[in-house]
Image 1 (cartoon, rainbow, N blue to C red):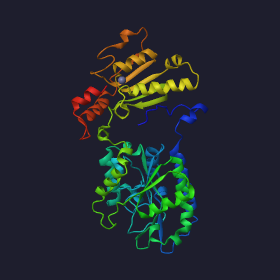
Image 2 (cartoon, rainbow, N blue to C red; image 1 turned 60 degrees about the horizontal axis):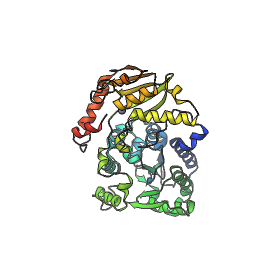
Image 3 (cartoon, helix red, strand yellow; image 1 turned 45 degrees about the vertical axis):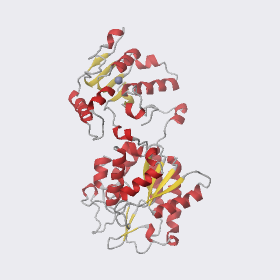
Image 4 (cartoon, helix red, strand yellow; image 1 turned 60 degrees about the vertical axis):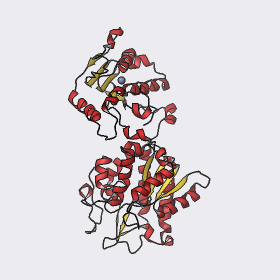
Length: 420
Ligand SMILES: [Zn+2]
């Protein structure tokens, strides 16, 4: 969770561009296209009969993964080799075991067929009945550690060296690691530069090579492209069940992460599992256009004033400062939509700023700035207020939260004290 609140809806100005995170996911997708174009020139080894490239035929879920989870700088790159037959080759997502992708990463979409398909290795997308053990283990571990995907992707992402799966005519899977290094020089010449650009793009500090092939590739690329950098390469055993002696991969991986202080790097102290925030979301609009949006990040920032409305206010104030706009005039045109009636603090702030109108979902009978204490009594001018819109939906969200979908969430009574 970023503490800096900048709306993505304002057009960037020269002042702002530096501060704003640029659109990393689009830049990355361009790199992937560049890689795929170059790979068309690559002469495949004679034993390879057919190539599956899920970044092409599973483009929809692949892009969802990149845009949803790979759009900010990443300190840590988990570096894999290439798609597995029942994982990424089906879903387009690295280590993409169907169940983890659908139910944990919450990604799903249409998947086409590769231009040539081998009957023994059908591509059935999210209907694939088989489980990719590597993917199940990989995402399963981070689900256990992080609870929610956001927590993992705050610092980390997964990148594959080659977006292709190679198959023999009997459907057998071959990887670049199955060939002699000398036979793969041409492939390295194509994939290394894109790998290095990806490291640069996301400003990666630590590469966690998943498997030996990736470890040696990462070391070579760093020596060649970043000879004087401090980027580290760490080796983590591959979760594949085919690897010898790999039944307790989860345990080994956990020890590895602990030994390298990576649990800490993921900001996963014991409170991490309680990271779910009170589900209050808010958008500010002017003339029907959304100009700011946010949600509560009280727990993530450990700052009890970080309510959705306050985050949006900050974002608008910053915009006004950067563009020399008189904020009082600007706020007069703002209509606020928020899932739950603003609390006393937020209601006071919105009144003070003189927004035009506030429209909320469920009433807030614990801290509401009208229901509990009508703050408009303290202000001469007051905004138009309407509520109980889609109240049931908003309320069921809140109830779900307090019921605690997270088994490690604190006692609901304690939560109540913290919430709006
Ligand atoms: Zn509030």
